[in-house]
Image 1 (cartoon, helix red, strand yellow):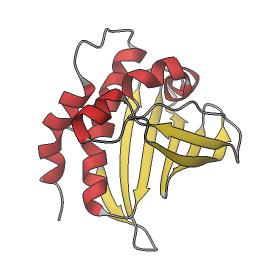
Image 2 (cartoon, helix red, strand yellow):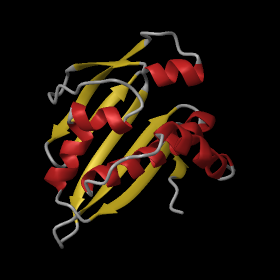
Image 3 (tube, helix red, strand yellow):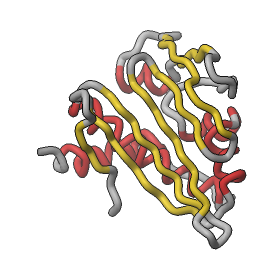
Image 4 (spheres, rainbow, N blue to C red):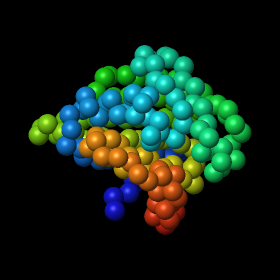
Length: 168
């Protein structure tokens, strides 16, 4: 099982990094990363991206987050778009976390997707790791046009033991 890797940044923050290969062009993967209809199936909050640098983002808790984690119903956190290069780079702030998504053509019609999620705390990074991993499984299913007949939340809980065991 490929899991994300954790490293420290120059300023002592924690960077969680995922790299995945997809046999699809960057434009198709970009749609799954930015289109609200696709995002609802795998992204851990309700958000619509205004793909303009400087745009304000509002991340709203989902009903499942309220149920599983006790987040207040309607809880929001804020962010802003930092960089947009369609079908190449999307970078934004989610509170103080930085999410950097990069698509690189692989020379065969597919692409590499790299997500680097930078946060302040290693425990948070490990918790995010399981969720992003489960999310990538849904992204893959969407790209392959396969039905998603499992709970992303249950899958993240299942994966969490792999991430908790990967620290230190």
